[in-house]
Image 1: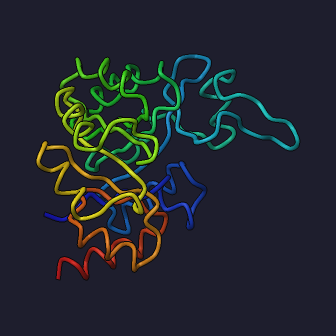
Image 2 (image 1 turned 30 degrees about the vertical axis):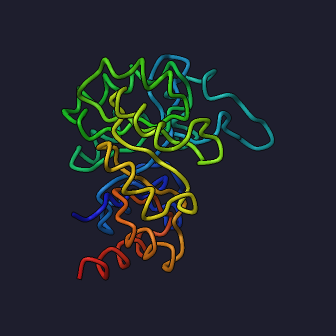
Image 3 (image 1 turned 60 degrees about the vertical axis):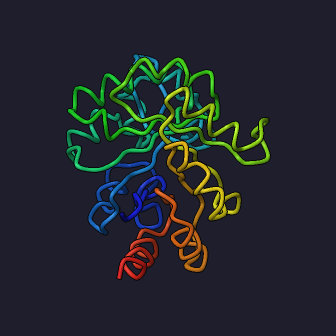
Length: 228
């Protein structure tokens, strides 16, 4: 089965990252998934932007201090608007930038009819444990291998026991053996920051289940070559 092809912050080399035009361009180029980052605005909307602040001129303002309408003036979309504009026929990987954004995000995904295609990512295992009460969304532990405290076999077992769906590590942290290890526990293997063709081919050969890349054209070409 082909891996999920996540366009990191959309087609960010073609359009401003984490914007509806970038997401639309990524899907048009064939990406099966989008990657983004979520915060709560001052008025409680789920908004999509990587940094904790936005800039206008020389002034920086915190995302959490601005309303969704004000953030829209900075090019920051609401998740609800992404679904309204693009539908829900894609996988959506979301880095939870605040603990408080998780449950509102799930509510938005449910309203769009796509909770089972929402992949909630965090380095915090305790948050994943809390969120597992929501059985209609996917949970992802995103962490560098060096920052996982337990041996990886025990970690894979722990994630499986919690009900976490995937482990997401930097592509250099994975090997074919580690992918097989997580698969033994029914935990999928996701690889991020896979930018060069040689690395894309390497993780495809390992059998990863999801790939995050900035270059959607390169990603789709590599997956097409591998599938052929």
